[in-house]
Image (cartoon, rainbow, N blue to C red; front, side, top):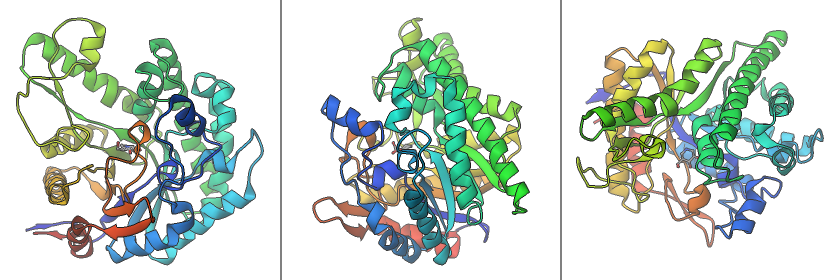
Amino acid sequence: MIKFPSNFFWGAATSAYQVEGGNRNSDWWPWEKETGKVCSGEACRHYELYEQDFDLAKSLGHNAHRLSVEWSRVEPEEGQFSSKELEHYINVILALKKRGIEPVVTLHHFTNPIWFSRSGGWEDRRSVARFLRYCDYVVRALSPHVRYWITINEPTIFFSHAYLFGFWPPQARSFWRARAVHDNLIAAHVEVYRRIHRIYKAAGLLRPAVSLSQHVSAVVACRPDVRNNIAARLRDYWYNVELLDAVMRQKSMDFIGLNYYSRNLVDVTSWRMSSLMMETCQKGHHPVKRNSLGWDIYPEGLYQVLLKLKRYDLPVMITENGICTSDDNLRWEFLSGHLKNIHLAMGAGVKVTGYLYWSLLDNFEWDKGFTPRFGLINVDYATYQRTARPSAAQFARVSTTGVLE
Ligand code: IFM
């Protein structure tokens, strides 16, 4: 039996674009149509059904919930803010608070307003001031109700997928463009971090806790030869550590928001940069179970990552961890396996403050569409009917008692 602290945050995470539906002013919306990808469309209709979804979260014993504000709703045209949309997010936050659920609010989760993308996006140095202006507007309004903020979700995934590997809009494949975005995201995070603290201080509010959500994978050399070891070190630095180090140097993290999913099993066949950066074992060495997108299930990696983060000497909140699968027994195996490793890491001195499963609902998984099912709650996309999965009830037993049997 494993016991977690009584003040532990238990819950799930979502992001606006993936669940709300109807985000027409976001850059993903036209991109889906231009590229012939699956359209996010109505997504889960969470924009209308959020009360019902939070009732479910409450009934599942959640005491925290991570959500994001969709920038393109709040500022659909440059400098023109929508008080109606802001009001919506205030109501969403109040709906959580009414149910005794602590909101963890993300200000940027992959999507941008169309006007922003068309005027240089994150490559443009003006992006920092633009993002700050939007955050200022949102934070002033939500600050009386929110203590936990995530400035930017998975900045490393964002700039690599959108600017380096060309998977997501604007589908660039350029090291230098990605680098410019990387630098601007860091600057934006630091500015917003400072602005949030200033706003709370001026209003005499309790000190907020501000972070970003960093995607960290367990980088493991398949065979420990020189080339694999070097590639593993480089990858760990590029994808996991560099950005974290940069924001830490600027003292702009009150806790670490950690998104952990899988391992990266390094097996490189050449010294080419692309191999060093991306090549993984294709030979089925060290086999483990996988999720429906083919990602390795590797719970011990979470323990390894948490121990690495210990050097920053900050509390860690798991802001995402989850599995897409059609096998709900596997979901529980995944979840309980990761919880065990969190507990082990806590025993080894890592201060973990909460666990937010990705995701509360099945949702729009970006370029992969609606097929991957990450939810504790099944969404029937024909009727928008929600049904909690058995794993959600198993997780509820942990979240309500703090005990994992
Ligand atoms: O769905 C995404 C989320 O938007 C960011 N983190 C990873 C999840 C699963 O791919």
